[in-house]
Amino acid sequence: MKPAVRLTRFFHRSRQERKKTGQQQRDIQSTPQQRFQRRLEGHGLTLASFDPLYSLSGLLVGALVGITGVGGGSLMTPLLVLLFGVHPATAVGTDLLYAAVTKSAGTAVHGIHGRINWRVVGCLAAGSVPAALLMLWMMAGVDRKSIEVAHTITTALGWLLVITAFMLVFRKQVLALAQRSMGERPPLRPATIMVLTTLLGLALGVLVTLTSVGAGALGVTVLLILYPRLDVREIVGSDIVHAVPLTFIGGMGYWMIGEIDWGMLLALLVGSIPGIIAGSLLAPKLHERTIRLVLAATLAVVAWKLLTG
View (cartoon, rainbow, N blue to C red):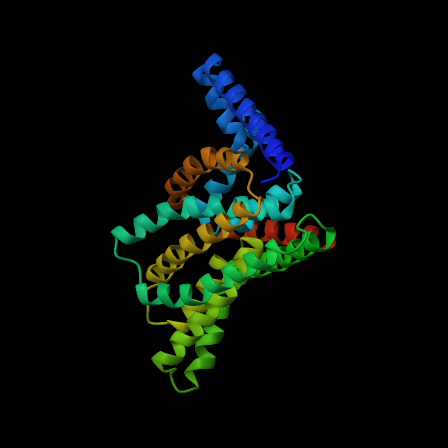
């Protein structure tokens, strides 16, 4: 090895050792609280990043989720984008992990009561997981801060909110129309239903990974059409269970490409968990139809803002 090369490597190692020694010295001199704070800052978590307004928003959204059963993504992601000015990609990524945590509690409840059809969950996941991975690969390869990407996310989110608002009001009519249409035809074979369920999972994987919305409004409605003989609670339980790995994979993918705000996520969870519990307790005492109409109108206004803004 040439002397010049050896000399360069010597000085490079010396700088690294001095840097490491300096860090160790700071760790020795600092208090445990200061060391813990530095570790939090390394992951983007600081006391300054914990905004109580996020917790208040999480409380309100959680209460509405507990009362109406509408997915949190339909409410949380637009709220973050329009009210707090969060970039759409960061809002979607953070909301996906938020949904993975909150839906895990619902999974446990439905699992305890045996309201999960694992065949339906498996068919959905067979389509949604590859679609989610493909969408994450595409998101990693584009400039997520560009106007074009932000416009794509907000436009898709706006139209999905339109569908959600429509289903909140007219789901029974849609199901009745679908049942009359299918009643005039021979029943679908089990293999055909499984293929259609997998295709539904494929569509949900794309939509949920792109916007964090779609699993509840679109997924449950189509499943009710495909499986008219299954109990509604079993359909809802299967949809929630399927949403947990889908949102977790999507959220972790957004984390890997740097689109998660951990301080915001923590603040949202602090507010939403008690909100969901309170909403679930209040639901039997409230007129659900009226709340659904008000919520549908709100989502329609938010969708209009996203599509025209």
